[in-house]
Amino acid sequence: MVPTNYYVILSAILFGLGVFAFVFKRNIIVIFMSIELMLNAVNLAFVAFSQASGKLDGQVFVLFVIVVAAAEAAVGLGIIILIARNRQSLNVERVDLLKL
Amino acid sequence: MTPQLVVFFVLATLAVLGSASLIFQKHPIHSALSLIVVMVALAGLYLLMGAEFVAAVQIIVYGGAIMVLFVFVIMLLNAGVEEHTNISKLAGFPGLLLVVALTGFVAATIARTTSTVQTASQTGMISSTKDLSSMLFRDFVYPFELTSFLILVAIMGALVLAQREK
Image 1 (cartoon, rainbow over the protein chains, first blue to last red):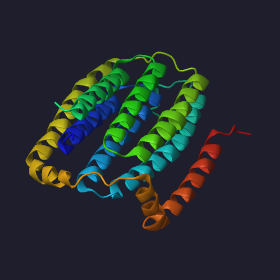
Image 2 (spheres, rainbow over the protein chains, first blue to last red):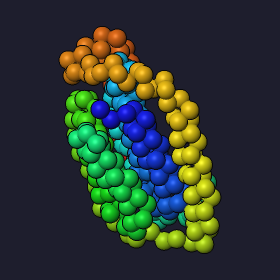
Image 3 (cartoon, chains in turn red, brown):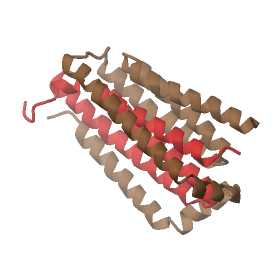
């Protein structure tokens, strides 16, 4: 059996990589993908702790997180389409004005 | 080195390499494909932990629905290779520091609380899809119904945002 620590450390590494992608990437779609990566890292920690404690609450929470991520992806991609239509660019550095 | 540990390390390496590839790919579609690799690897890890239903939902919802949405939007907007300015190259260094600090902090916290986690892990796997469903529809039925409302609001929001101006 794999120790729970390994899963949580892997989760921390994936979350860190997600944060780095969030800071480093300039394409708004890739920034959005890095948010999904961070959510996935948190899900991994949830399942690991659920397995460690022998209770299923963590897995139920993962299902809720996935639902929220799906809703977030739908709304977020709608916003991205709107930004791309109005600014003709997907670079976040070109989206620095509140008003066109 | 048990077989489980070997499978864990293979899947963990795959997940970390996929995330690194997400960062270093220049084209958004390559980043999206890397993210699919990460999600499939995580589904394998869920299977390894005995969470079959979560693994299936991970593949179907994340690897299927959400990533198809991403790839669809990338193709719709004709997203090209991303451009880096001097400011964004400058942002890489604090970002790297942030990541190292965050990962180190979490790892240190885990290392400090390792004994409590270790003792609890001996209780074994009680996970089954039947137990999960009875929990979801009995103890968590109110939040479950609320998520349907959330999805309804998200659908309406996406429609309102993406419709063409008259």
